[in-house]
Length: 325
Image (tube, rainbow, N blue to C red):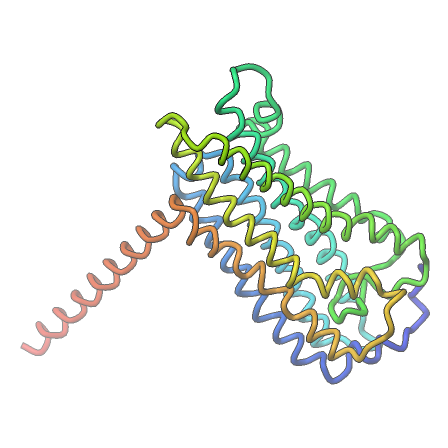
């Protein structure tokens, strides 16, 4: 796709009147998401009990991928706000990272759901070889996360080699308007396929887990903690799966169907895209609220911070009283 010398009419609208307010919205929501996920990562990695649970590393992987994705959107906001028809460089840079990191984020809910299913289903099985021990053991977790990051990046190679990153017709920096059907298909089988496939796999494993939990309502006492943790994580994954289905749907439809859909004003496209950012803003806080181990640690840190503030306040008050005397 040669777009270095070609200027599409929609690009004028891309940097038009709606660019400023949309860039401010992207910057604000993306900054909040990045800070929230940094706090979640620090909370998990700084707590030995949370760090020792292998399953939590996949939650950290999702958190890190969201950090990278929305950090890319911060650059995206800068590119939209400061860009113009003659200044499109930063949008192409931001678009490359937005799509690559987005592909990576889409895959983690399915990985987490699969991990929970194979871990919990081995409770009632005899010891021996299992998918859980092969793919989701402690020594394989980090390589699996890194491998998924690598696969997500490589899947976007056709777009990288064809200078396809830039002003997305949906209104953000992503993939330029396609003029080549093979390139559009390459996009569909990388970013869009990862999104749809992840939702489908998460739904399948959630259904299988629900069936397993109903069938094995009574488990030994030593396995109650594992079951409770799985139920809590799957409640989070259920919301994390359903929210993108509705909130990310407009982005997927507008971006994937750009050669088929009628052209709409850019401000309408951007209004439809705005909910996309809300699901990721909720992810770390949903985990903290619904998973008991995270909620307990977060509450403990809040009380510790409150105690420190009260102690410092009392110290300042006493110092003031002593000076007055």
